[in-house]
Structure formats: structure tokens, C-alpha cells
Length: 306
Image 1: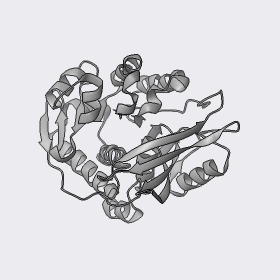
Image 2: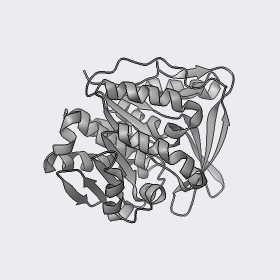
Image 3: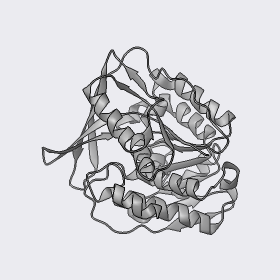
Image 4: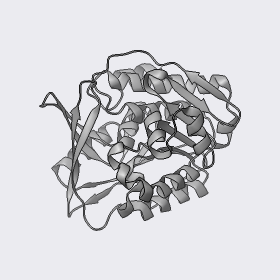
């Protein structure tokens, strides 16, 4: 049976609106998507790091209760689980302040068994962090060697723009390892100066041949060597956009897993297959935007599973 691995950061998101706390939720780009996949009853395994403190235990209990395997998580003693203060603006987009206290040894994990066409989700700033980069690349090269299907989301925020020249080689190396790159128009404008999907694909295709480009209200674009199409998105009034992109990735992964789509099929997928993948991704993302949750609800997961 295929397995789904996510490698990424762990935080406790404390969400503020108008200066007041609204909710506290375990978060992190890959964590959010894996919880949704766990609620779908898919075999989701998390590779991450958090402390042996009360916050870390809260996160670990939450993950396990939602069907996410945490046996590959590094639980460290000398430090604290990361806290993220998420401040929602008038559009309910989040701006973050992080509180970090890591030990010297980071991401001390063993490499798991990976089978052909297992799915690996990776990305965000975690994937280009120098302190864990060596271990991250060791895992990613292991996954590539074993023919896993790798989905990479750069999720590169403007707040790190001054570090881009130093970090761009890491981003490009991640794209070379990936079978599918999914990013926002803002990501590709920040990384490559791309003004539209055509310019983004021209930059990305040098490293990865399959691109999913999300452009907020302007829709979702798919570009591969054999396929190109734009998909509309519904107009909604979001409560919070935290987890929207993460769950878009989870929706894609759910369709790839459920449809038994293999790594070597991505470049030549049919229009009907891409429609299933993107429509599911949009559905997951929309569901998350309509609450303070970072993941799809158990009720939504049950309905979708049926």
C-alpha cells in the first residue's frame, strides 16, 4: 500500500483578529495538509521536530488522534516547541511572529522505508533552512532514489526577500527533486520575477516539468509538457486563509492517492484526471477558508470519502 509522507515544520498557531486571540491550533505547512489526509483515513506519516514539552505533547496527541503517524518526529529535550502568533488583517490573511528555541541537534531522524509511488509533500521555509538542510536533502534524495512521487510547494514569503539570493539555489535544488511544483503567483513573482503563469512555467520547467500555479480569484493553472488549462475558483468571503494553500496541496494528494496516479503518469495525465485533481484541491482549500481550522473538518472528510 502506498504511503504519504510530509516533511516540514511544526508550530502552535495562536490566531489573533482585531488584537484578540481567536483560536490556538497545531500548524505548519505540511502538518496542516497531513491532518486533512489523516482525517480522510489515508496513511499519512509526519517527519518533523518538536519538543518534549506540554505544547509538543498537545501537538503529538492531536496528530495521532487525527490519524497521522508521528513515529518519525524528532522530540527534543533542550528547547521549546515553536509558537506562531498569526495576526489576521482586514482580508483575513495572516501575518506571523514566531518564537523559536531549538537545540543544537536538529531533525535527528532515521530514514524510513520508501516504496515506488509513495507520495512525499515538502516545501515552505523549512525546506531551505540551513540548520536542517543536510538532513532534509538526505531524505529527499532517498525518496527520489526510491521513485517516490514528490510534490514541492516553495511557499516563499516576501518577509524573507533579503535572503533570496542566498536561498535560491536551495529552492531550485528542491524543484529539481520534485515531480510536481505547486506554488502561488506571489511565490513565482518573488522567486523569479514572473508576472504570469507563462513566465512562471518558463522558469520552473528547467527544473520540473509539471506546474500547478494558483492565482487567488484569477483561478488555478496547470502546465505540463502535454497539457495546459485554467480552472475557475468560487467566490467566497474567507474567515481565515491560514492553511488554504496547504490544503490545496492535500486535496491534490488525496486525488492522486485515491486515483492511484503514478509518478511516471504526471506528464501525460488526461484532462479528466487533472479536473479531478484540481477540483478536489479547490474544494479542500475552500473548506478551510471558511473557519479558523487549519484543516478540513471531519464531517467534510467523511462526505468526501464517500
